[in-house]
Length: 262
Image (cartoon, rainbow, N blue to C red; front, side, top):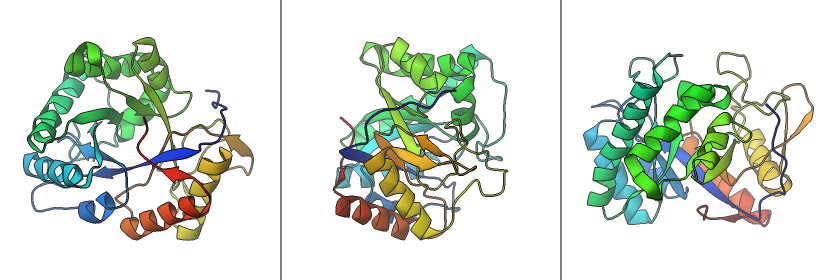
């Protein structure tokens, strides 16, 4: 996969994975993160989240003017959506549509709506290079949203974004400040040592460099061009909310506006 080369962003959206709990178990500090991000990727019940959590996060996001996105996943609560699965395309499309539709109920009840879709975990990584699974996700978006469609967030140069664009959907490239990149511009698999960055200073510096210069240092030390209209800040890392505040402040200091993608 070739990395996409574009000009650095004058403005960037900040998104975070939210609602990643189930029942009495919680993982993300949703309230704190919603005071920082401009887009909320809400778990739709397949990798995390339940109806009560989805409703609460939608209410909080709507009250703060934060865009609500459906974070769709393989049906994998036990594995947090991070296990590889082979789901038939028609079945996957139906499951993607089901998740979007469920979240839309709570978004509308809160006075908002689902504004975009982003795959989670193993599904996100699979759709980088698997045309069938990428097409199934796009088909699910179309099934749920009809002709109006919804924007799709994904990795620059991925087959997911290509399929979305071909289907007439807005393809939104995103970057990850706390993930290691390969020289090809893909994410280093989570099971690999160093795949997730834990040094807050390094994460902040990478976020600014990605947004202001359009590049990141790959795992082998080489520079990689990245295209990002949205920057993901993972909500399941320790101190995620405080780190998000630092990233937003640093972006402002570097002259990068933080705003939801158009």
